[in-house]
Amino acid sequence: MLQKASFLFDNLVSPVNVRRTEIFILRFAIFAFFIHLLFIFLGNNVAYFKHFQHSYLKAIYTPFSFILFYEVLQLVIILPKSISEFIGKQFEVITLITLRSFFHDIADIDFLKSLSLSDAHLINLFYDLVASLGMLLCTIVYYKIYSKSKRSETIEDIGRFISIKKIVSLLMIVILFCLSFSSFGLWIFDSITAFQTNQNYPNPNTVFYSEFFTVMIFVDVFLLLVSFLYHFSFFSIFRNASFIITTILLRMSLTSERPVNYLLIFVGFAFSIVSFYFISRSRTITT
Image (tube, rainbow, N blue to C red; front, side, top):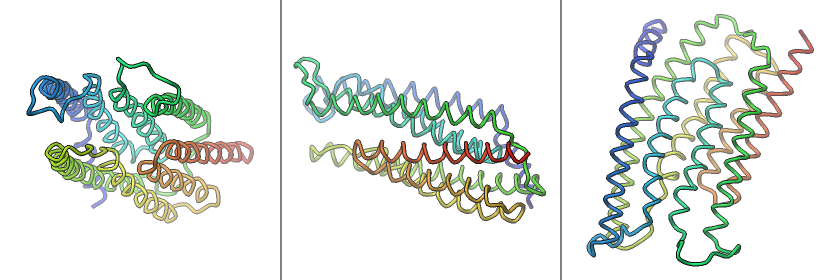
């Protein structure tokens, strides 16, 4: 069964299929970008669509969302390769979510008016930019530690464990697309309701990514428990537990307000980086 699942995973996520998926998502992102521009044009010029009245800069948010979805798909695909790289990819996804927030927030600024340092929209932009740069730095540091650490696998029957991770990855791909379609449908429904009642539009981060990161918490715990079947050590427990803690903090950040959300992200990043560094150093010393 494990061999069949592994074979199915290898065929499904072959380089050719991954590239085809990438091209499809990028083409759809371009299409959605022009559709969003059209709606903004109608909102700015047609009375019936006045609730869609926004700055044209807000359209940048839409294609970036599809690019972000592809990054999440890459996150799921990379799971069988390495749990450490899986966590690094989580860093990348959260960083891109933060960077995407800039494109969302900048459209709320009225460039025809003079801005003050106390302007809430300007403060949000400052949070987005500083936080995204800080997350980029943390991600770079994490990958440097990862590349320099000795990654000699101590898990017995490593091929069997990889096959289990491939099954988990396949299940997560199914969950990813199910959540995407259901969340997108819910977001469309809420957006139509907001359009009819002139209310604020729903936040996409809380519609999809919070649920997906909740699933990843349980995936991390499951893989931690399964890994004990092949190798059991204090350092492995602590490293994987630190990754679970980071995922939980990242999940909490998606439904928290600024700047608390960014504080949770940096605490999660720092905890994983410091733990990973100490454990990699301890393995170097012992060997």
